[in-house]
Length: 272
Image 1 (spheres, rainbow, N blue to C red):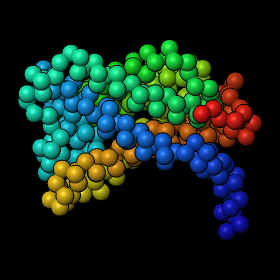
Image 2: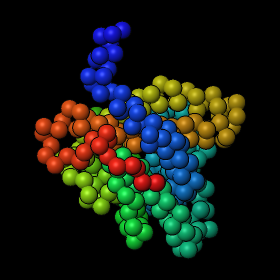
Image 3: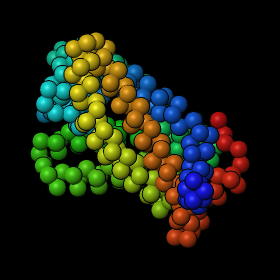
């Protein structure tokens, strides 16, 4: 036990756990899931319904992200897919309203990144960054669905890995207003993508059968609860991956990254 404790302290893992507790990592993940479901999902549904290529809509995005196939994917599609008349009943003002309500979702991600790097909240006029990040996120999800049927095997895996790392790498840099160097943010982007791969595997073995069981037992509510649980996992991975990347640099990579921001032990108090 003494050896294990010494190894734990030598790795600095206790610092990572403490920092995750300080920024309320799980609470942020739950807030991420809630905002994603009530603000981002309606926007993506409208955009997917307007898709001229008809790639399956928002349900196809969810099924792809959760690694679902077969019966579980069909159940999710039947429950979450928007009706065909959604375009006819959605006005331009409705789309704009959905976009406005979707901006706080980007703001929550930006605030999480700022807390991890101990940066003050960005000024209100940086809201355009949140809106731009939301648009790029939508484009990223859309291309993931496009390549689901167009590419297979190693080609699609490679493309998904590269585009995922690039998106989360750029996303941190962009939302933080270029206050943190590119090389400081790369480990967090790689860790985030690795976490999403692990979450996808977990979803395939756990959430896929639960969707079928919950659809039979509880109907639509049961499926939505599974989707919400998966979104909590996504939020935990996005924030946790960035936090892990920073921790890795401070404890094991400071020799290779000049001008690294000070570790959490020497930081000023976090800004709310």
